[in-house]
Image (cartoon, rainbow, N blue to C red):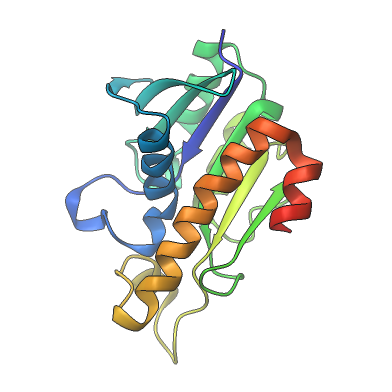
Length: 187
């Protein structure tokens, strides 16, 4: 029986691997490493790994569709594993948080994030757990799409790595101690 599904949002392909928009994929990779996941398989339009974390059975997932249509694979995963949306944790990049900051949220809108919009549309609910990894706003007149699909430069790389690490910790905290205690730690 699966207790939680933790989905990292990102875009598939090597050209996106280290971009800001892939903070969710990177955080899920950190969780997989900590939980010693040895095997990833392709199912439900995602790469998945089943792991045990301190008594909870988890499915880690990195949907292999692009961000704006990620809802389909997420819905398939929930159906396949019999998991309700209140046991879904989605890790994603967030422009509205300063680079390096992490916050948890239960439910809410999409804030312009196409991945969250797609998930909400497919699940017909906005009530799931979110881990928001702050990437900050684009500098100057840089377009948002160009910013999120670029790799952080040297001066921003440390804050990005900090957000990815904290995002992985926050997701595991949601599983271990629940939303209220995690929110006290991560805001």
